[in-house]
Amino acid sequence: MSEPDSSYVRSRVCRATEKPWLCIADEKALTQFARNANKYLSEPRYHREREISLLTGRLTIEQAARYVLRSVFAKDIERASVRYTTAGALRRAGFAVLHTPGRISAGCDGDLSHVSVIWPADDPVQRQDIPWDPDVTESFIRCFNG
Image (cartoon, rainbow, N blue to C red; front, side, top):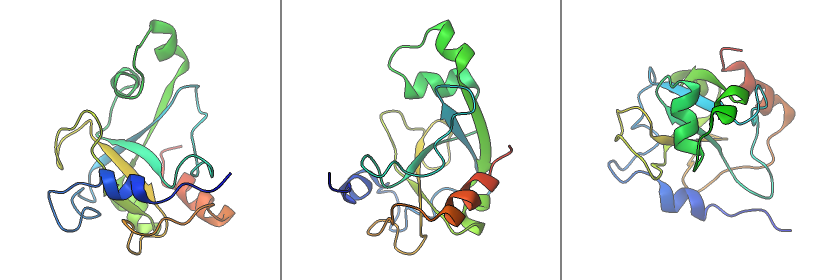
């Protein structure tokens, strides 16, 4: 199976600015959602994606679940988890944080909008290297609250 191409990023990137990797402020809180408690993606899945998806804002499990899942039941919320970082923490670690608005978007500054975390940060609309080296994956993990 071939690796996914960068068309997803190019087709979803925010058009509000010429530099969509800068329209999310460094201090913006970001949430990563896991369907199963503490089973977070720590690198892109080689045959599925070129980025890691996060949501803007410091969201609760229920808020994130309602964005990610089509239908949300109590059991989904009970077994899920979230963790937090900021756009600045990811950028300082060498990642690009690209605003890639999803089906729900509150704009560049609002909560509950989709972002793509890409490595390396150089020209992230055109270049997303996968798989990530183990050092890159560890650097990504260290950006979160644990």
